[in-house]
Image 1 (cartoon, helix red, strand yellow):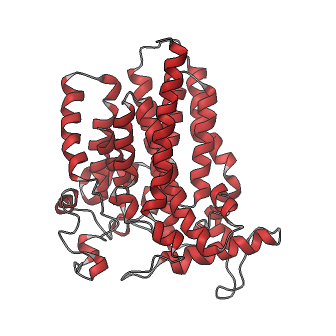
Image 2 (tube, rainbow, N blue to C red):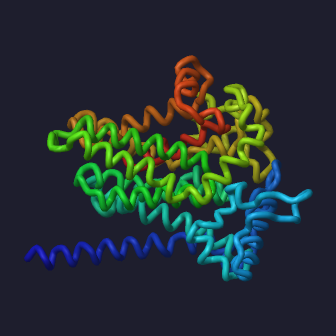
Image 3 (spheres, rainbow, N blue to C red):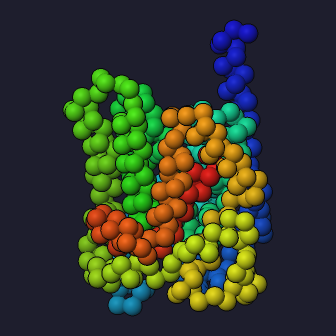
Length: 388
């Protein structure tokens, strides 16, 4: 078969799979979209109803009057809503959906996060050498894992996390192809993560991007890269996004100086821990109970919060992960070693500063102690399982 025709057929098959991934979240959340309903709260309240829905109204009202929501008089004696950082005012998805009814806008934001995650994960898996159907399975395992599904109440978190495969794809291509174009796309992706409104996932993601850059630069046989090229690549990936997103980052940093986070200690970071016994959630996520049925009765201060410790990917992907792990090691697939390494590293980081090694790491990296729930490193664990 001529190469041109073969490429056309392949792209058509990819298009059909991407079309399937695009339809899937509408089926998954059909009750939200066609029943005009909202996800309700849980035993700790509802960020959707008490935070993100009001933000949707605020964004809608602000854009309709041509104003930026710098300040709200409806909270106490007034509050700097833009600086708060979680509204996602500058996030393009929120801007596009702001012209709709706020409830529909909120529900479509959830759908959009799952669509972005699944499609970008599909293309990352294909770019890493997986076949199209393996990439499809990897995409669904990652995007519909309990890490995403259990955190829909944190729409800004899953919106930020959904961009991770896209940025990682651009970082990978920028390194392997020595392409500044993909480095620029990666920097735009990181800035979008800042705009999506969850600084913790953005901060953690940047650490992993740096890890990927270091891995490929150290393992690459390309000796043509000089110091200037590496420096410029570093600038595009890790400095330029700060300029692009500075309109959000700077006011949020200023407000954070008046937050109790500035006085956080390592004990505060690990208030809601992830423990070894929580790994049972990989096999049965409701082992300690189900919050939806009010059976999750553990002491969350000692044993963690259900949705924060949720890392269930599915039994079949989990079994396949062990096979993939052993195959990568056995066949010495150095190009794929990144995923077993990331699997182990992210699992270690999920336990946070609860041991001496973790404590040393948290002390060594500035900014780590600003965030609770180190179990959120679970996104990279789930990502690695899905790839393997």
